Image (cartoon, rainbow, N blue to C red; front, side, top):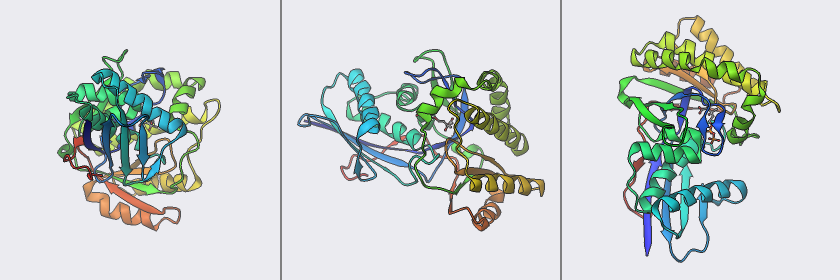
Length: 330
Ligand code: DP6
């Protein structure tokens, strides 16, 4: 007997960041967050539950996972087995078409695609809310890659009310993310560990307390397609999160000299009147955001910077979706 499904999901870039949990085990975040799914970049995942397997098998980008990364997936599959009352072990094959673990939210697209593929393969038909809640338990930001377009994660207080929903479809605003890749190396300290140290920074309480104000401003700017208001709050939120990271114990520092060079250039271009701003997740690569009208110019300028190895371009993407039921879908 075999149960197979294939799904895909895009990573997302957070405009208002998730950093720190009120409950680490279930990933109930300290504050709400807001993001956009990134079309073009994606994870494709197949899951097959098979009665012949005596343990789970997980292959990411052609390599079998082991250690902590493997355990994280197995524990997640245990949740799906618990929900569906299946006992079979699974084979998971997953591919990213972008650098893994370098601040481009590979865990977000990874666990969003895995939630959909694994739940379907196990015979479950979860709605978007249930799927977002499930994805959250694999990786917090993954709950935001389940719905489409511009997405808000309401923090909630428990598993039941902590999930993400779409606030505007992908076609609402032609906002582009030009990701300046300055390093493709896997980050030294992953987000999971980082969230656990957020409260060691004396700045975290102030960042969390002010989050509803920033969320209101960002939501409004997106709804009104007001790029200047959007740029102001996105950069402020980015600086607040990185200030918390840097002032935590142990201190986390994700920027490289080339990241700073990109940020300074973006500020200069904005001073020249170009609508552009930046944000960075837990990695050195810089997400440079601009409306469609400025994309060509910004991409060319980024490529001219000596520290920028390449630029990945993306615009608002759909939510997680099922792929045709072919065994070779990945
Ligand atoms: C800096 O969702 O990667 O990208 O739940 O431990 O997997 P885990 O953390 P993760 O944290 C994302 C942190 C961030 C900001 C954001 O995406 O909101």
